[in-house]
Image (cartoon, rainbow, N blue to C red; front, side, top):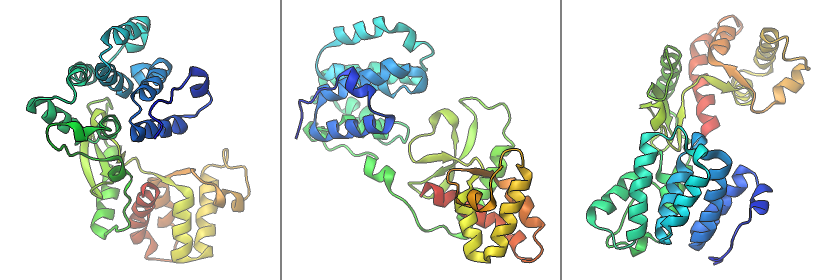
Length: 296
């Protein structure tokens, strides 16, 4: 356990986002509260609350834990421009977690229930799981959605789910006037189903059913199910539709990863492939399967 490791700005500058997140996990595991403060303070100064309110929420709680509210207030005053546009939810949670941090672990039942509510909210559960590294000190056991649970993957995708996913693509396409309160169809990986949720409430392990399909995955599926001739047809048609963009050989396009094809384009291509009549009927399920495999 390395619970006294500190992080300088220079050291954090050399890390990418994933590496800094891994250090957050390490600090949580080591119960290194000052290391957590270093990283969240760095992220707050770098991104502010516009990118994510998590940094402000974390700092509110952590400065409360070390009973140093003056330093926290000074941090906010010195970086006041970074808090412009803070949403009401983030502000309210931050205010509550300062109080909870100061009182921790001697919390009353209302405070414990408040933490438990956040801990079971997919939008905040990963953050709370990392902050509550010593939750065993609380007056009673607290349960929530853990980081391990968020990472759990699925391998069972019945036809009913595939229908729901494809329908979600179509419903999201019809949404107009997108804003943070827009209700969208979302794939909930923890429960392996489609749910409806406001954009601003979407949390970890929840993914908007956008209808943009990973080309590498869908082409693999088509080749495995229908053979090289079908694969070659789809690659050719994708290149024709994007002739200005795809100035590469078909074999090169075939191997590209993290390249996206819209589900409507794939459906249109399948409808004109007459060598395999059932493909037009099956393509929706195959597209939905490719979407799910990418996320699992």
